[in-house]
Length: 566
Image (cartoon, rainbow, N blue to C red):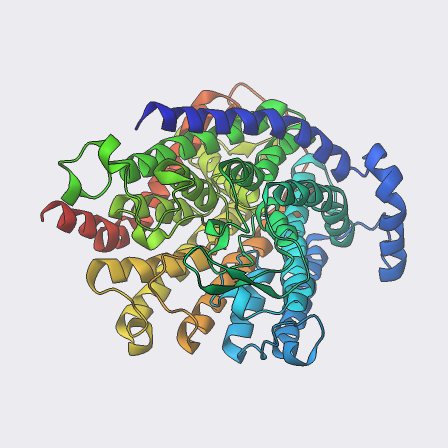
């Protein structure tokens, strides 16, 4: 790994920490409805939304009602998005005259954007009208991200409250997360992208005269606005098929840096928010420390793998070879592409600025394993942190067994119910990935769309189900996923990975809210120390290794050994 690669990684982390802490303090005020400055501007809009929707700002829902509201709202959103795609040929703002989207792709896309996955089994610029992109995909990018933040708000109340039945109102949390957090940040980021050269227009396309002397049709549209929320909300769905490798989505090296910061910004800030809400900012630092401890070595690994390049070119120096540049934009290079990949697969954001199918075997293994850990290394907005807290619950439970006392976390006892729910959060997505991959490998409908045979083809299938189930949305490429089998199978995987996690998390929140705080005693395990951070990281790595190492051995590890033996 070169000095410039180290400098890029260090600069990225320094800027992230500098921006995340003040945003975390602001999120605390949003959580409590005390964002006074923003409230003066947006407060009337918030109250108008409540009146129009018949929502009481002081409503306090038990966890069952909170969960039901989440499910009903997202089901209605999925249905609306499905119908919008099916009817887009008869709707306005369709300057290219695109036909209706096929039923299977409409189903897959509707589920994808509602679950904050944004897996795209289509080419956006040649499939979706401007109306579908703006009213359907962009709106769902906002509210799916806000749903994750709302669920985290509810879990934070579960830890902070005592002898309480309610977790707050989902509708209030959803509105505040959208209005006070995601919308302002997206406006700022979208304007920045426009300044860098990203497209933002309602025009359909223009014809330009290329340097080769031929006419070329260039697709246009409202790109910058969708790009901003795709990153801020850790969605990942690009306007163009090339996603953040397209110069109209990610024009410069500076925009590339801002895109990476945008992906991690809210997840990192939520750690500081959580620490303050539970009465100890050190607790937020501990969770953030575990995320960084997992991210840095894995980011270094993927950067080193891509800088090393193809073993067949091993006789060339790094300076001559410039790393593995196959499938990468030269304006980002091997380092900028590899770091972006580590960031986007650490978060549940499927944005890509390079073709992952062209990465080295080990370079492709790292982002796959980052997702298989459960998208908790920063992860999605809200979802990353509540997923990490499930691992924290398991870590303190294991520690409690070691010393022979009832485990406690943040003053709440972790008992059988909490452990069962936390186990479901971890086990069901993992089982979905492995079972989906196994089925796809043995049925003709799963193997026929493969672009590559052997170990690499297996990696493409494993990556697809890993990405879908963990609500990431990126793809290896090479696998045609628009057919009926993968559209339906990955659609179901996305639903399980999103809502089978949310419901148990809210059940834990409801159980914890009913408890009284237990005063810390001599046998209480401190959960803000480096020792606990190491225990938490060890639990995550151990579970991830035991669960997915056999599958990884059949794919990228075998491919690496085959490549090295040539």
